[in-house]
Image (cartoon, rainbow, N blue to C red; front, top):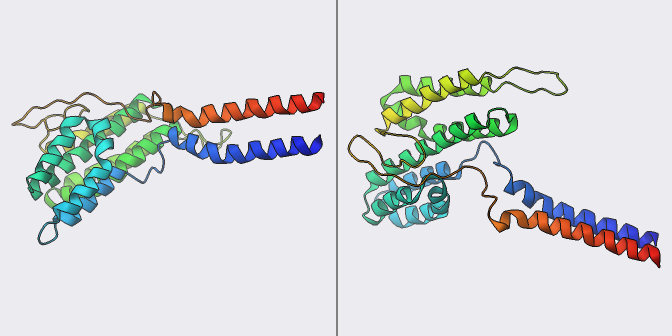
Amino acid sequence: MKKRILSSVFLLTLICTLAVPDLAQAYSYGDPTEEKVAEAYSEMSAKLNESPPNFEEANKIFASVKDEIQLHMGDDAVQAVQSELDNEDKEAVITNMQQVLVLNISRRLENAESDFEEYDTTRKLVGKADATYKTLSPVVKETNPELDKTIKNEFEVLLDSLGNPGLFGVGEKESNEEQFAESKKVILDGLKDHFDMKSVESGHFGESATEEESTSEKTDWTDLSQLSNWLPLIILVVVIVGVVVYTKRNRRR
């Protein structure tokens, strides 16, 4: 009997070990220093700056983030980049991807502000926005070093304004939502002007002084309406119930 119980516990532990990482990934923003779209932009730029421009490889790289861009920035953002890739217009592709990154920064900061009391979440969101700006920083610095310095400083202020819940009250620091909003505005206004965008709100890709296009607004975070995001939890619950029932039946024998 004891051996059966121990076997059941071992099986449950093994399944939990395998299932929980997938579940955590579904509910997590991941590494705050990584941004797939920003990394794709860097790789695409490198390929397009080859002589001659390598549009074939740039297309492959773009394909790897196309779904994510479509999810958060809409069909227009994808079509704008893809159209210029098909036309083999290097400068237009790079410009459109830069605007995609600006919108990505915007949505990260907007979501951080809406979930301001959730320290772990906001810290990761600001970290991802900052990681994206680091990719754009050389572009801004080339023509406007003062703006680049200002934006970098404001990102530091953003992180500081989040405060710190501390550990059991140790190291606790009060947050400042008003300061967060002010710094966010400085960053987004600066980027909007620098990249000639009429709006940096989600659902407004490509809106500049000369063109207006709209996309459907997309939400951040993992889409919990997708069955695949709930599957690990469902499997885990079924296994736990099965182990409990199995153990009870064996006790009665």
